[in-house]
Amino acid sequence: MFSATRRWFGNLLLEGDVHERRKVLLLTVIYFLVISAYTVAQGLKDSVFLSVVGREYVPWARLASLFVLIPAVLLYSKVVDNVRRYQLLAIYSIAFGLLGLGFAIAIGHSTIGIGNTDTSPLRIFGWLFYFFVEGYTPFVVSVMWAFVNSITSPESAKQSYGIMVAGSKLGGMLGAGVPWLLFALDDYSKAPIAAQVFTHQIVLAVASTLLLAVPLVIYHLMRVIPGKYLHGYEAAYQFEKHQKQVGKEKTGLFSGLVLLLKYPYVLGIFGVVYFYEVLNTVLGYMRLGAAEEYSETLAGKGAFFFQTYFLVHSVGFVISLFGTRWLMSHMGERICLILIPVLTGFGLLYFSLATSPSALIFAFTIMKAVNYAFSYPVRESLYIPTAKAIKFKSKSWIDAFGSKFAKVNGSSFVLLMQTAGPAVLAVAQPLFFVTTIGLWTVTAYCLGRRFERSVVNQEVIGSEEEAA
Image 1 (cartoon, rainbow, N blue to C red):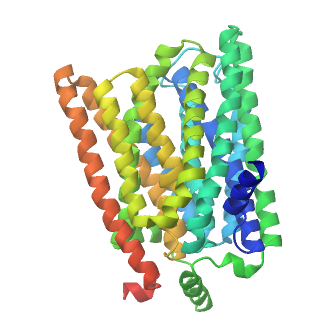
Image 2 (cartoon, rainbow, N blue to C red; image 1 turned 120 degrees about the vertical axis):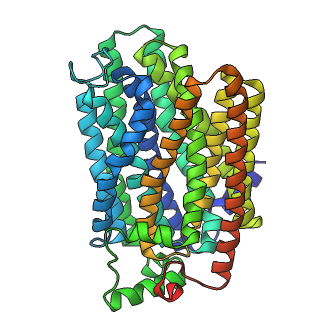
Image 3 (cartoon, rainbow, N blue to C red; image 1 turned 90 degrees about the vertical axis):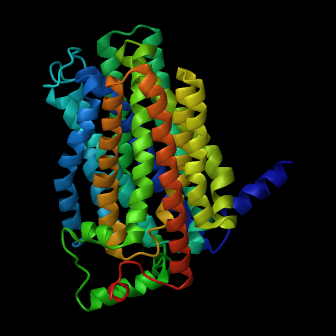
């Protein structure tokens, strides 16, 4: 039995050339570190904001982040043109790691930190911390995936992305499980507020230190992996090489946005991100109410959030290890893209019928787990047959501006439903879910069909040749 299990994991993890296996292993370590840090920041974001500013201002924070991140995206677009891809990931990992350490110190301040339990929209620290965490997705997670997509072929993605995501889920379980345990102990022992604040500081500081380790792994990867294993999609590599030779590799600050609006394929990627984020925002806001009912203490709210994320990453680990790779290899991107809204729809259907706190947590867990473990690798593989400007710049607009725009729309629906009566809510909410899932499914089908045609024809979406 042990021998058979070892052979199964050996076949799962060690297929292919030794350098390809080593590359996948190092990318998995990077993803593990990134998601460990991101999970901690994500879990603290809501806890800190609720304690410092207040739940009723969460929709406004999402609206404000839409505008706050635009200058950061423009700066990012400038940096992309002037540094190499692996350097870009190292730079943003260091930046967010150092910012995280700074926020860990500020959390303990007696006036601006979370020890001050007087909530107010005038407390700037809560807003700044919220914007900092919101920047994780477009400037750390997204940059990591852009780097991975640029050095991975479509065939390799089918084999390796499931393994990478499984590794990241272990990081997520670590990043959620340890804080959950610490905060639960604080809440159970009725620890004084100073002890609860200190726990927040330690958790964020350790997570930020893990992020600072990412550049070391990147450096090792670039040193030990031969250059030919870092080409990725060969047609895109040759196109970008030609662009560099003729001096056209720099594409301008707004090129990512221009390409997003110009190519239906890129708009399709925007669409699948948008529909997910809209639904995620609606369920996420409902979850904040459940957290306030769960516990009145700072540690208790933190324990609730991290418990939820631990469940999400645990379910995601099982999906990514036993489902993602098989589905991507045997079903292809088009079927996988369609499965994502279908699975999400089943979770929402259960919640709509049960309408209980446990049903809400179940639907939220399923939607998040499917997104992290299945949707992410499938969606990220769609960037492989695209030019560098789309991989890095359009992707940053989608993950920053696009996802925040979706959150604003989701928050607007939440605010509208707060003013509606129970009868209106009973009709409007299921109708909203059904319409969103339907549009998402149609977009996924068209997007998957275009991806498959591009790979078969060795096209580079976003190239000047294609545009002509």
